[in-house]
Image 1 (cartoon, rainbow, N blue to C red):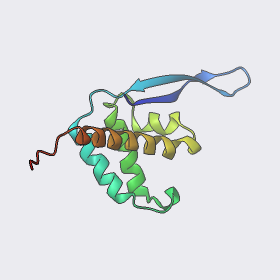
Image 2: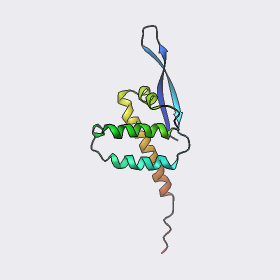
Image 3: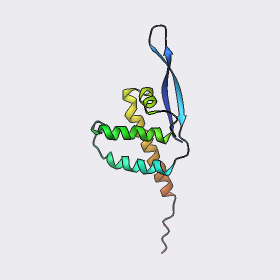
Image 4: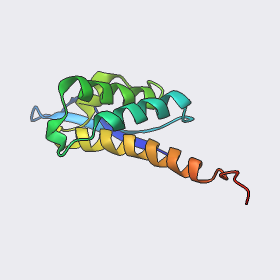
Length: 115
């Protein structure tokens, strides 16, 4: 099961700081499209460092996560619900979870070869 927790703004404290509540989302059934997009993104991410990710790929990764969770939140809610330091690690964690799930399912399929 893939989950994601975001901070959701709910107003301001008396001292003017933003008040937030944490909301956890659960990924619904993993669809085949999510696996295909995960493969595409994995191929694009053959990078040495996360800092090398270009804007278009980063944007595609963020939209992947929104779609992965069945659009239970928007792109803006994802971007505003995570800190700068949390964003890319969280997105990469979701991508990795999908790819590991696909690998586990493929490993369970017998190869069908006979001797």
